[in-house]
Amino acid sequence: MDKLMNRSWVMKIIALLLAFMLYLSVNLDDGASSSNKILNRSSSANTGVETLTDVPVQVSYNEKNRIVRGVPDTVIMTLEGPKNILAQTKLQKDYQAYIDLDNLSLGQHRVKVQYRNISDNLNVVVKPDIVNVTIEERDSKQFSVEASYDKNKVKNGYEAGEATVSPRAVTVTGASSQLDQVAYVKAIIDLDNASKTVTKQATVVALDKNLNKLNVTVQPETVNVTIPVRNISKKVPIDVIQEGTPGDGVNITKLEPKTDTVKIIGPSDSLEKIDKIDNIPVDVTGITKSKDIKVNVPVPDGIDSVSPKQITVHVEVDKQGDEKDAEETDASAAETKSFKNLPVSLTGQSSKYTYELLSPTSVDADVKGPKSDLDKLTKSGISLSANVGNLSAGEHTVPIIINSPDSVTSTLSTKQAKVRVTAKKQSGTNDEQTDKETSGSTSDKETKPDTGTGSGTNPGTGNSGDSADKPSEETDTPEDNTDTPTDSTETGDDSSNQSDENSTPVDGQTDNTSGN
Image (cartoon, rainbow, N blue to C red; front, top):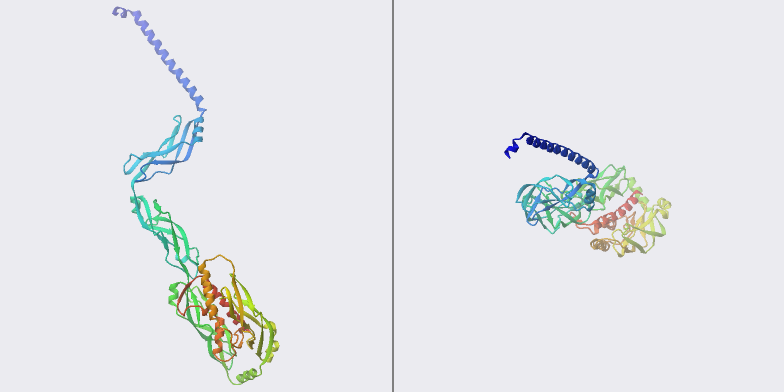
């Protein structure tokens, strides 16, 4: 063998073989590379890219005992590969993004967002692919629920009381660190210009000391909240003073309001500061004879409204010398004129009732006064009315009020009217209807019948004596018969306002008389 290897021609053959093998090796690699390039160019036409947005992230951990924070709700996945596989993956929607935390301890961790149900032939990119999570022990605590509402958002003249919450306590569940941040657990209510008790279901939220909402679970999620809303008012006495100068030779001997008290409505703290409305000015400029004058009642500071808004003040005068003698002479020359079948109308009607005038439908009136005034007086210058503003359902007897010129006095053939009141069918609470019926019944019992003759709008009073003015006062302010004593603070619903409003037409009728 050694001898063979020492021969030159053998070595030449071996060298030739090695060179040939090297040549083949180089050419085969170039051919394979060219083939791969051709295949790649062919396959690129059949590949594509799909971007899947808002892919939910599922988290695997011990939900019973642990709380996980920092996991994103969704991720974005970009898929690249054969178009047919991309289309199939997108259509089936079996793909998932998930994070496995089962074997991790409490504390902070950087974990990879993984995916499944996606073909191995696809290249997948997840954003974000790494997330920072915190694993904490789950804990639960009980907290009292506080109703949160703005007391200033009730209707003017109303006041919101203390709220009641049911159930009073809720269970808050979350990470221990978050429960330590809970400063308030509130049920938020909007009163929205309320004028009656509000009862609502409110969602409960847990807040930190800066009123930021915490990511915790509350059970139950809602509670029932009841907030009482009541109308607040107070009756206070009034006092009037003279303003202006009367006519020549005339002295003012008396200023007597026909309403002793008025009702003020407003916040309770303002009501407590007011015990009286005094120095209400009565303008007597140029007055020459006794008469009734209508004056506005001022609204005190801090008060929302006053009821009634106007009062009637009787002004008594004393004339001197010839003027007094002339007046007495005119009074002695008074005549009487009769008017037959004057119709009776109803005033102060409520939309919640229907009203029927049972009897009488018309009344005769004897009018006494100066001949010059009686000659000008016609049937159209006299009107009769019955105020039904305070009446509840049922049959009632109410005084008949006459409107006639101030210079005459009138006597009615019938001084009272019988009225039937029927409630319309309508929605509303039984409590509201009971309150109205109680108020109406009380007013009906305390209304006094007309007992004599009267001037202007004051039936059956005549022109002499203070005692004759009393029925007129009751007619002018029927609401006073059912109100609580002076200076007492009142609460109630809207029916009390209806009573006050219904009393106003009576004052309005007196005003018409005074104008004449």
